[in-house]
Image 1 (tube, rainbow, N blue to C red):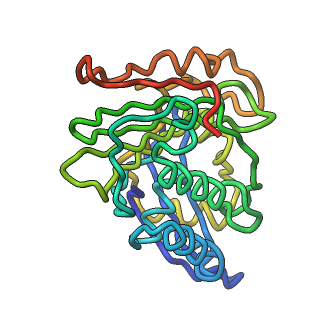
Image 2 (image 1 turned 45 degrees about the vertical axis):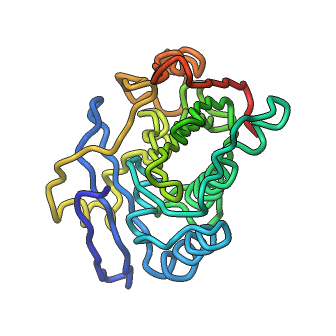
Length: 260
């Protein structure tokens, strides 16, 4: 969640909203800046459509946007999860938590890949799913999907992990945890201290909390080596840091190198 939000009318008639975050462990600062027209005419309608088309209830679109863009956790209520008695291994990957995973794909595309939707001064990117890890316990309707995205044509540690989790007490609600790596944040939001609009907004309030920036429970980089390999862990090494929650022996875990 953003620490601070501002609206500013400048000499260039810029009107928008800004989310500020305290520095990452490597000292890099993350600032999100969107034009109000961009939010009202493009991003918010697309977020609303993504939720509506998949049967999910509306939430605060600014909160949803900043959670996806910089990391965080949000609970969403949607279609009732069908807790099957068993799964066919041949079709499991295509049906397990399919609506929730499809929603995440749509949200990631809206925030990072669509021209005109990205933060001020940035360019859209392409990415792909590189791994999926799935867990379930049919006796208690526990379900969990962990999806790894990788920014195409970027360093191997330019990763984004999304975890979707729910339990039997509420079959319609799931917790969505968005976790960009530090490298992902550095590459998406490089610091530009000379930017007059962003600089003015950034000076208006002291940030207090950093966005989530971990893969496998730890930062994947100690320095922001934007634009190069940087010697940071590879996707496979970063993924290995993830400790799958072993609830009990009845849980079924499926791991796939591709969850498309």
